[in-house]
Amino acid sequence: IDLAHPSAEQSSPELAPLVSRLQQQNQTIRQQMDALSRQQREFNALTDNMSEGFLLVDSRTDVLSSNHSALYFLGGGEAKPLNNLRRDGCPQQVMSAVEAALAGVRTETVQEIDGISWQIIANPVVSSGQVAGAALLMMDVTEKEQREFLRKEFSANVSHELKTPLTSISGFAELMKEGMVPPDKVKEFAGDIYRESQRLIELVNDIIRLSRLDENDRVEEIEPVDLYDLSDEILANLRPVAERQHVTMTLEGDHAKVQGVWQILNEMVYNLCDNAIKYNRPNGTVRVKVEQKRSEARITVSDTGIGIPYADQNRVFERFYRVDKSHSKASGGTGLGLSIVKHAVQLHRGTIALQSEPGKGTCIRVCFPAK
Image (cartoon, rainbow, N blue to C red; front, side, top):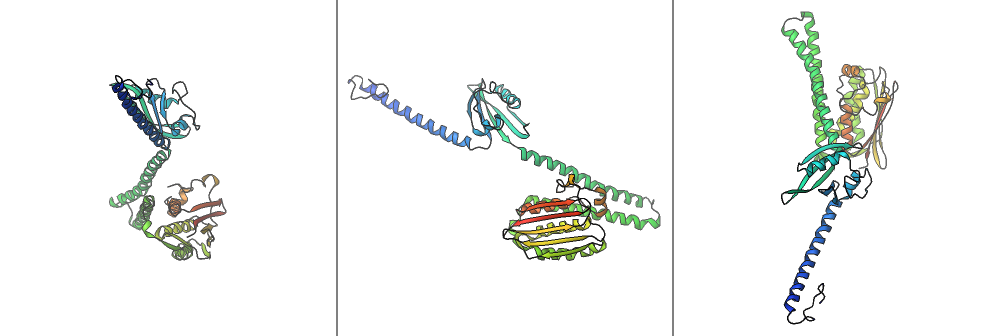
């Protein structure tokens, strides 16, 4: 009798019940194997399409299952075959997590490997009360770590920037309260308190604007916005400020419409023009040009001001970054204006380019995709 393919018709009557039983068992085994094969294919399809790295090892660190992301990570940027973690040169940070899991301890850590921050989670696999292996999950959290760093840096900067004017206001007010200010100096001290409070209000308003831009949830307010009309209105509002600093402003170009949030675009253009006035020279100029190209709308703000040193040009869009702190304080700058501009451009899927030469001026161009 062929035990792999038993047939009741070919066997003697005495063996017919046994053969029938074997047929049923073979059929059950085939069905189970088909189900296992299907589950394995589904599991492979699931893990191979994960951006996270997945690895399953036994107690001897032999690799039982892995996906492409894990092999790519452990292979240092190349998906190399991996049979055993110890023998095949697994990074020590990963090996430490695996060994802890094989000892029965769940571990979760963030390690920087080749400039990338990886969150590594290792869990022991228990069978019949014994640790039989370890399951490893590896996730690229570089962006998350960078955001957390920026959040902490932002919080520290906010605390410092708020403390400075508050300390001045408190100090001036205390002197006046204790009667330590001569009568002829009271007006001067009151003016100092007013200026510091205005700086504080401007700083808080800028922080609120940045927070609103970070939320990125104002889609319902999108409408066609004419950059030329917007710039004309802003220049009219800023003209008294420019005249006090003996700066001439001009607007040229064409009407150009973009789909966007009017308030945010208004803040963007205002900050560009306001910066061009603040950091200009007496008898300098601010030139605003609006253009409608076939594939994009452009607005360019250029000035004849003090310019930005080459070493600082890559950082001027960072929050609270100021090239000349003494000038910023004198002009009332908060260090958030260009950060607001950058966020506004990103929100509208635009691009921003900066050209500057110390002592000769700065030119900032913002391009938006066509309507």
